[in-house]
Image 1: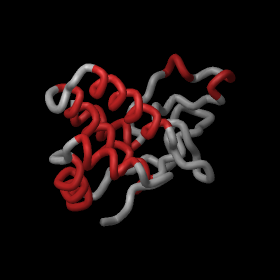
Image 2 (image 1 turned 90 degrees about the vertical axis):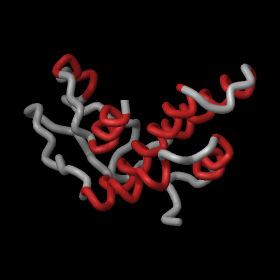
Image 3 (image 1 turned 180 degrees about the horizontal axis):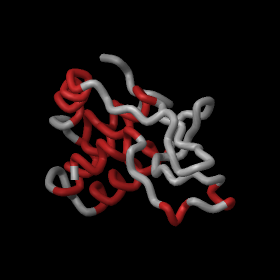
Image 4 (image 1 turned 90 degrees about the horizontal axis):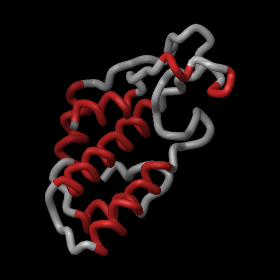
Amino acid sequence: MKAAFIEFGTGLLTDERRNTPKYFFNVIHSMDGSKDNPPVGYHRWHGVIRAYTLVNGISDGQWLTVDRCMALAWAIQSELKPLGITNNGENPNKKNIDPSKLQELESKYLGMTFDQLDDAFDHAPYPTSK
């Protein structure tokens, strides 16, 4: 799951079914956002996860893992800012995250509690560098 969220954040996941005018030839899966409009969907999904976990009395487990991985993807996308809009199915901005930066972000986000994730997502549109 972690690897999927990392690839999602970097803009490396593609789906040829999205190669239609409806999606402006955007075959790249990434959270909503663009060069000039930062992604806000991560905040929305965090809110949904938190509402579900609070209502159901969940303090750890699978939903915490998903929320941590989503925060990691948010940090990666915020770092790389992949555009993903193409005319030929290619991503001209395709780049992998530097391994040392990835390790730094993993260390920061993958051990957070729900309360720490709440604090992290209080920052918009991008994560703090602290």
